[in-house]
Amino acid sequence: MRAHAHTHIMPPSQKLKGTLSNCWVNPRPSKVYPVRPPSKEMSTATVTSTSTSTSTPTPSVSQDLEDLEPNPNKRRRVGSSYIWDHGTKVLRIDGSSGWQCIHCHHVVPLVSSTSNQRYHLRKIHKITDPDQNANDQQTTLDTHMLRPFRVDIARKLLVEYHVERRMPFLAIESPALRRLLEYFEPRSVKALTTANTLRADYVRYFEIAKSTIINILSRAMSNIHLTWDLWTSPNFKAMIAITAHWTNDSWNVQSILMAIREIEGDHDGENISQCVHAVVKEFEIVDRIGYFTGDNASNNDTALRCLNRRIRAEGGIGFDVGERRLRCFAHDMQIAVKGLLFGPKAKELETYEETADVSEEEKEEWIKVKWRAFGAIGKLHNIIKYIRISPKRRAGFKTLLQDLEKRSVKVPVMDNDTRWGSVATMVEYGLENRDGIDMYCCEQTALAADTLSDEDWTELQTVDSTVNVIDNTGYQDLGAIQTVDESRSVEE
Image (cartoon, rainbow, N blue to C red; front, side, top):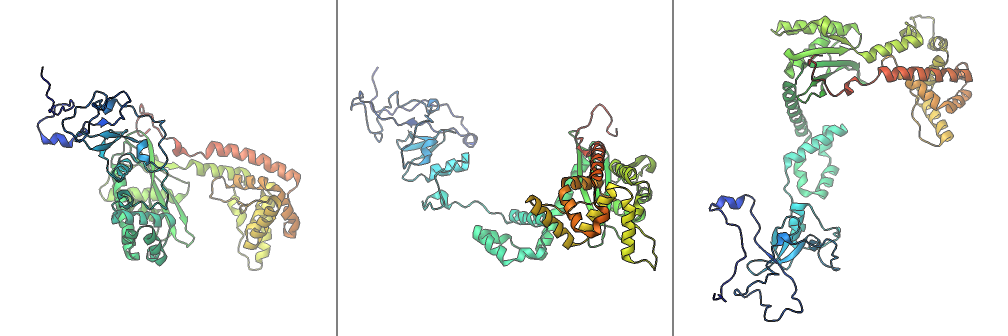
């Protein structure tokens, strides 16, 4: 058979389909060949120029690169680019040199600079030059590539930052903030707005989040159960927080804070029901309400009766108040612990009947005597109340502890009628800082009658162990049970 010396022999390739659309779906890289130095045994006759179109690749050169295993342990020479740790030099089918990525076998033309290879490694494989530093002055394409900047995303991130740090709206107009953002990224100043625009972004962001929650609640597998709590804010506003609990389609218990609203007027049941009714309508769960959990306050009972009446008046299904009303277990446990420690009239300990002839000092001393009658806990209560009553006393006690233990300390923790576990926290704090409390009482003549003896500290240790057992049993977060037995009904 006669050899065709002037015929260019193409490497074998897969047969392509006839439509151009296949070129856009998983395009295969062109066949390329590794450039290998000729061996000493290779004659000069067999080594031909790659620019000659009549040359025939030798079997060693025509090896498919998919079978080529790069040597990861090969050390690159000093001064060479890091791209050679992730690619090899190859001979393209048109005779030009190329660089083939060892991760995806993509071939990039090899020219005088390495910008195309660096861009490929960074964009596709998230690989950057490990030796690059901030003073690199290389004027390559990748160092001047600017990623797209979206003003809407930047404004959303600014809203998140302001909400997280509870910053005022006017902070967005700070010249210092503008200079800072302009230094990092000049285009970012486009996201800076006025205080009024930032407020509108707040509202828009909130509405988007609320729509998401409504959508999630609409897919709940169970009814939507509610808990709420009331308190008075430091600026004397009556507030209520409403939380929803439900089971999602993965049979996991979910909870979310739906609303924090101000209650107009007193904390009575009518005002509470008006606020709760507005929230359940807003989140479209009026006909899917389950159980209600709250403390034993009578205004919660009234609130449920009023809420049921409001729902039925607007054509809703309503609910059985006696069946759906649940008591907060942790609150019941708090009442039991306070009754165990101080008796059924613990709330009267801080009250004194109005009498014109009694001074404030006499009232305070009378209250101290009543607390002192409860033994070690009452004395500790009087001591901590004395320390906390003024900034000067708090600072003096903290200074004493810092000098004693050479560490930062916290303000003494005081028991509270509504804070769960507060008695145990107060006793635990007292035991941890026994030496400091004893020294402080010795320095303050006003605390002479409340100074704790060794027997008192022993009593506090007994109280601490007893109350902690109750805490561990009763104050656990019932919401931590995150799964539901699918063999039982959703209501159960």
